[in-house]
Amino acid sequence: MQRAFSGTGIRASEEPLLRAGQGPVLMQRAAHGLATEVARLLAEQRGRVYGARIVLLAGPGNNGGDALYAAASLVRRGVRATAVLSPAGTHEQALEAFRRAGGRTCTLAPEADAVPKADADTGSGLTDGDGNRTYAAIPEQDWLAEAAAADVLIDAILGTGAHGGLRAPWAAAVRALQQNAAAGKPDALVKSRAPLIVACDLPSGVDANTGELHEPVLRAALTVTFGAAKTGLLVPPGEGAAGRLQVIDIGLSDGLEDPVLRRLDATDLALLLPSPGRDDQKYTRGVLGVVAGSGQYPGAAQLSCAGALACGVGMIRYLGPESVGALIHTSSPEVVCSQGSVDENHVQAWLVGPGIGNADGSEAKQQLQRCRDAYDSGLPMVADAGALTVFPARSSARMIPHVILTPHAGELAQLFQRLDRDVSRTQIEANGMRYAVEAAKLTGATVLLKGATTLVASPHGTVFSQSEGTPWLATAGSGDTLAGIIGALLAALAAQTARFSSVGIAAEDRWAAIAAAGASLHGRAGVLAAAGGPLHATALATAVPEVWRNLQAPGPVI
Ligand SMILES: NC(=O)C1=CN([C@@H]2O[C@H](COP(=O)(O)OP(=O)(O)OC[C@H]3O[C@@H](n4cnc5c(N)ncnc54)[C@H](O)[C@@H]3O)[C@@H](O)[C@H]2O)[C@@H](O)CC1
Ligand SMILES: Nc1ncnc2c1ncn2[C@@H]1O[C@H](COP(=O)(O)OP(=O)(O)O)[C@@H](O)[C@H]1O
Ligand SMILES: [K+]
View 1: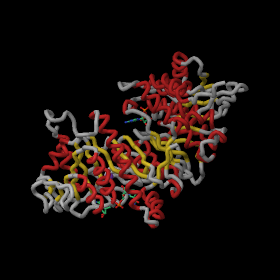
View 2 (view 1 turned 135 degrees about the horizontal axis):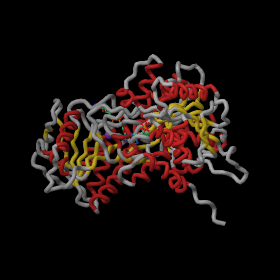
View 3 (view 1 turned 45 degrees about the vertical axis):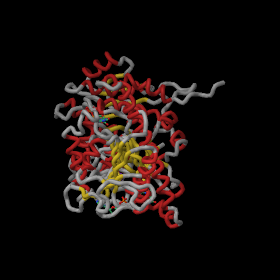
View 4 (view 1 turned 30 degrees about the vertical axis):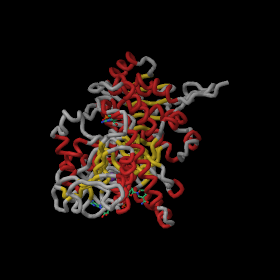
């Protein structure tokens, strides 16, 4: 399981080491990790490290220091490196090491434009191996051209010491880089693509604690982060700016306290996903009741049932209009369909809401009543789509973590409105974690906020984040399938607390873990079904069993 910590938490864990004079050692470990990852990237892209070109944007703090030390070691491997320095100052020892190695520098002008000044005491670009001036400066303005021609651009302007977004002159410098990239520079004759951006510790402008973006932010292909993952790198929208995440161990693990969030990995899924035992029969494996679909949206019911069936649910009891039941029977004859009431159906969990419509007709009213009855039954429940418009009706002082709400950002904004809290979709998209956590606290329910990174907040404060999917999942019916997957896992796993404790998840957090496992399976199924190309929701359920099989850890060879 991957764990993420707040930037402040990670800094606190560094404190005792810093007091013990270990700061330089930590920085060397960080720099070594960064240099190794950049070298790996260069080797992948170019076939070799020697002769590559990098530009680093080195801010005034330790973040810039990390990158300067890393670049110094890359220069010693034959990389041509140019550091753009902050007028506010630079980590002196790291700069010295960089210059000694033969790195080139220029310093941004303090005013709010991107025009840099060549370092005052250089000019001619000379280097000498043993004198004081062991570096060369680059002429004014040239750093932008140098950046465009580079193989890798290292963003080391701000790290965990950042307060807010980039200020002048860095903000202007980053905007200038972005404008160049948008205008199609660099010259295609020289280089076929823009430099790969590597963020040192985190992309500058991403809030390490919340994942909020303070623009301008350079979108990284790779983020090399030190000590542990910062929360902001595993939640939206920060994760989208960070690219691939590589965590470098710098020896902080002893000081790290409770993580802010967790991410289930393939091993966790293999341990958590249910598999039938010899003595099982269909009722013990979990029966899922489904209240979904309407004359207007029959497909949502079919997709939800298909998602649940793909997870090997013991049985589905479907409640809804006869016409929808007939359709479900055609695509999934194993589903038991009726028009009965919730009370008449014995199940382990309910999935309510996909495609029930919001019209006032008697059919929709009946479905909404079934949703309420399912809630009143006190059984574990997934409330999706249409059910989110009636539930929860009021802010609840009760803890109901067994109720899993699955809104996307727009639906969460509506939910907040019903709770007399004015939060817009845009605000939720800018800081998903804050609002998922707040919604879980307000409702007492488990809240799964859908998106490229899906967050699951338990009302007890635990947060999971999953991001295995593909943008191809943004297609109609994808969410219905997800609801079915989570419903099936809920029916099978709700009572199996031991399974969760075996992977370090408290019993009270198992509802959130079930939702997170569902999101992970759904994302993986999306990647498999899309295979790099388009995806339609029906293909998702079909892909789930193969994803599941691939997750199972190989058994012992007897
Ligand atoms: N503390 C440690 O023991 C270690 C720190 N490491 C590195 O050090 C970084 C943290 O270093 P620092 O605490 O020096 O902080 P930063 O390097 O993030 O930057 C702090 C400096 O930036 C300025 N600044 C803050 N916000 C700004 C803004 N919005 N616009 C412009 N300037 C701004 C501050 O005035 C300060 O001078 C980590 O991200 C990591 O890269 C690593 O070397 C590992 C060990
Ligand atoms: N850009 C994206 N990248 C990865 N997954 C996405 C992206 N956009 C949406 N998804 C996922 O696709 C699903 C869409 O659900 P939803 O919006 O409810 O669709 P629908 O209501 O049409 O079924 C969610 O699981 C969400 O996490
Ligand atoms: K950075």
